[in-house]
Image 1 (cartoon, protein in one colour):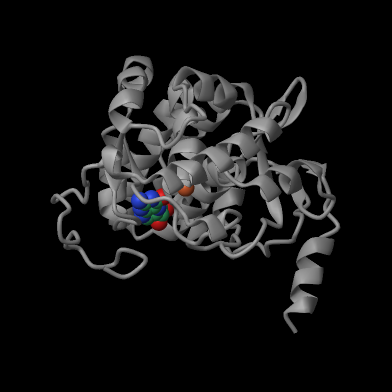
Image 2 (cartoon, protein in one colour):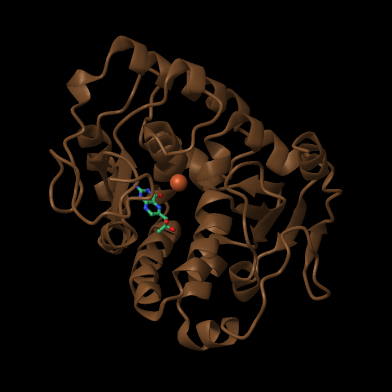
Length: 290
Ligand code: HBI
Ligand code: FE
């Protein structure tokens, strides 16, 4: 199976829906230690940075410090709270498989954990990115509904050939979303909250733009997969995010088919500008790459 899961047959040992047993007993002490190291770093950093629903979810699921959590244990509480379950998969799964899981309130989490020399970044989502990053927000009823709506929307987007637009919505919300709160801007995106450096960069660095979330605008905006984001979109509430998905996307996709992409560093005239970035980080990285 290639990295993007483009083949449709599950790898050996996986079930037809690409799930595998987590095999919690088989994790080594070294693998548990990687989880503990990553957990301790983020647990120290996130109060005051991650949004309350995330921090509450972390507590509720007791993604404790003593090692990789057993899905059987966390699913008991997660099921009770929002009907979601975490299921183990070998890695990235094909889009249609991914959406079917989300549409049925199953979150596919990588079963493997990164190596000690990969603590700061890895290309494919591992169990720390998926379970520490994504799962705590699934304890929030509104976000739990949003993730299921996203799964259903993904199935429809594939039928309409608009997956690239919907993937941007996922990227700028589920992975790299920010939330406006009375205490200030807070993180809810899994890609940020599971990364020590980006948990700091996304809130504190003057480089990126931080713009008010607007669904169609987000769907016209490309994203970075190889580095910190150059723009973050800020939602006023989780309810506003869920409400944005309850409309019919067909007319939106129709307008998008005639609209051009918006350059990643651009600020449009009717953007709600929370912070106008300097783009200094992206420019320095581009210069260094010359
Ligand atoms: N598979 N396991 C896994 N996790 C993901 O986050 C994931 C995936 N397959 C496809 C995918 N994400 C994205 O392309 C979605 O936008 C569909
Ligand atoms: Fe993710």
